[in-house]
Length: 309
Image 1 (cartoon, rainbow, N blue to C red):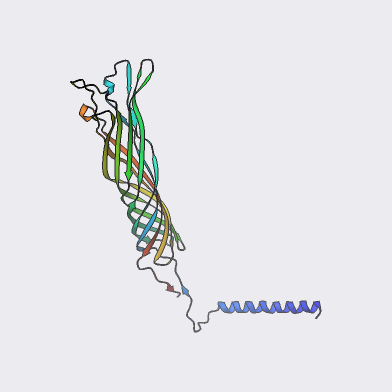
Image 2 (spheres, rainbow, N blue to C red):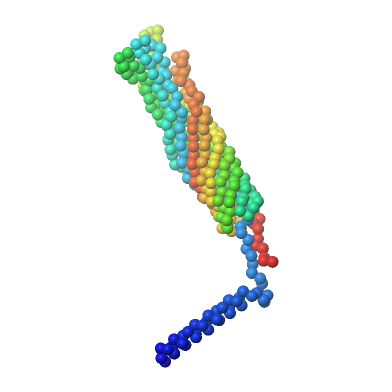
C-alpha cells in the first residue's frame, strides 16, 4: 500500500468514526421512555430543621487583674521629710492554651435557597488554667531624692475553667452542600478564681506597750492573705464557621469563637485589718478566650430525593 492510499484510508476511517460518535450522542439525548425509569433529581441539601451534635477543640485564654494599690500603713510615720509611695499590683496579661469540648443543638430555617437563619446552644467544659503574677514594693523618697524600699509585695491570681455555655444566633450563606455562617450571643462560664497577696513583714510597724515589735503576721517573714471564689462569669461570644453536609442527615463543621468575660469582681485580701487600715479591694478582672473547634451535627427528618417530573 502506497503512502497516498494509506492516508486516504485513514482519513475515511476517522470520518466514519466521527459520524458514528455524533449519531450516538444525539440518540442518547432523545429519551424515548423505554423500559428504564427517568433519571432521579437529587435536590441540594436542605438546612431547615432541628439538629444535635458534638464538638472538640483548643482554647487560648488571656487573663489579667486590673492594677490596685497596696499600702502598708507606714505613710503616717515617715515624717514630713519623706514622701510615701504605695505599691501597685496587677495589670499584666497572661496567656494559656487549653482544651475544651461539649455538645450543641439548635434549629435552622432556610428562608431562601441561599440564606439560613438559626439559633444554637453550646454546652460543655473548658479546661482553663490562667495565672497572673505581679511584684512591687512600697517606697519612700527623702528631700534629696534618695529612694528607700520599705515593703516588698507580690500578687498572684489564678483562674480555673469549668462548665460553659452560650446561646447564639446564626446567619448562614449556602452554596451546594456548604454553608458559611457568622454567629454571636450571650455566654457564661463557671470559673474558680483564686487570688493571693503576699508581703514581707520586717517588724517595723511599731512596738506594743511592752516594747516588743508589732508584726502583722506574728513574726518576721512573709505574710500571705488569700481569697478563693467560685464565680459564674457572664459575657458575650462572637465568631464564624464553615459547615458541610456530607449527607442529608449529617454535617461536619469547623468554627472559631471569641469569648469575652470582663469586669467581674474578685474581692481580696483584707490584710492589716487588725491595725486599723486595710488593702481589701474590689478588683475588676478580665478573662478572654479564643477557641477553634471541629464538630458534627445530626439533622432530624432530612428531606428525601424527589423524582424528576
